[in-house]
Image (cartoon, rainbow, N blue to C red):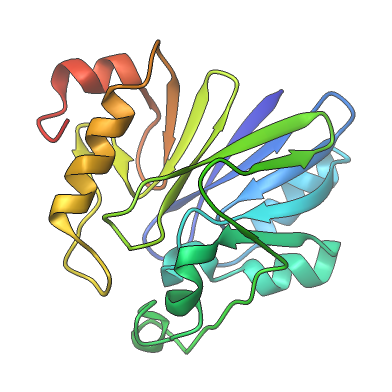
Length: 202
């Protein structure tokens, strides 16, 4: 498995490309100008089949339609995030360059798995940043969206956010057995063990 991080969009959203040994890949979240993403995919002869969304805020969905149109990807999104994805005011896109709505091809929930080539992603519901926020787990890696950051966590003052829920979600991540590499929606990668020891919100 290969993981590529591309920081794109107006506020530096991490777009991840996770590929198997045969070049089949999933894209996790994508905002802004997708040209750097396109270049990486084409230079490495990858075959994107799925876009996985951790949640529905504008800075994680801005390039979804362009990527879906170019590659014919299936968009996988949390079922509980459907109302936010459909509401440009709730997903904040109406304030940030134009209204966006996204409809998923596959709606996912707690415990579901998504198969992408030889890769299998598991869905872990982690509400708080938004009501439908999820993390994607694969092997020893967690793609945490805006739930967990290095030394911090996602804000909860936007529509459907909840401080009590994000604290419960962070506790859930903290209590996972073993260690994981953590790939957040913004900022540098970290590990779960580092966050257990040093993140005040965990």
